[in-house]
Image (cartoon, rainbow, N blue to C red; front, side):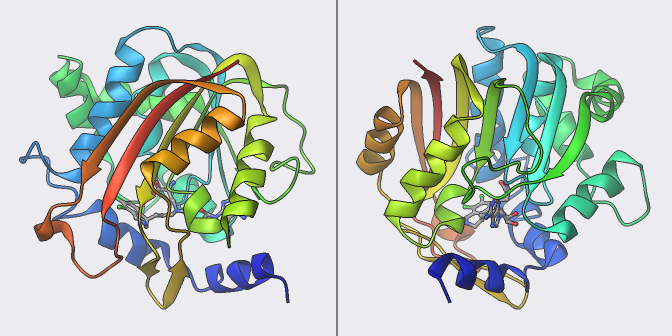
Length: 262
Ligand code: U87
């Protein structure tokens, strides 16, 4: 069995509820403390969009998981957002929220926080409505495929976001660089890549699933992004504080990068 197939097998045990509990509730999602990891991620994304350079017709989010925090700021700058993930259980979670179904995760604290960053704290319901109107598709994707959206073919998009996907899915650095190339083939020249990822991590838990992660450091990430044909505009890192090392993974730090495809 190929390494990639082994990874896919492990992901069959991926539990979205446990995953959301581990990474998107207290203590990692504490909006009262500025130096908490989730508010940091939201501020990075908000600052990229408030600069006004990133906008267009379509943004594609690769490896969305059961989360949509990564496109809250983006929904005011694109007409269409396409979410995508390898697992039906994750795509189902996203559809539940989009269709206001019972059991959907409550993203309102995230939307309120982002509206606060934009100085529009009272209009979070409009933002949620806009998010539901802008997210038009939730598709299957497999970054190991030359066309990750196969069998669908999408015209090259204006921007791609991908958070904690490459290093959490690829069995090794060689396939990680190939997967970055596969994702890059979906992006217009001049288009922007917004990536969040884990540094020096080797595993994470999602219920019964224990997923292997390729440990990468800052220099390596910058090197492969430049090698894949990008100009890096922004690169920030966040060191995981001890009180957020809660035994769901061994991540040391998180990076945020904004890059433009040359
Ligand atoms: C997120 N984007 O939470 N092709 O940001 C495409 C695939 C494939 C494949 C599996 C990893 C989570 C990282 C979402 C989900 C990202 N998922 C899908 C996690 C653990 C540290 C850390 C985490 C989260 C798979 C938050 C924080 C930290 C998952 C997604 C990876 N590490 N996509 N071939 N195979 N996937 O279904 O949804 O990738 Cl703060 Cl520190």
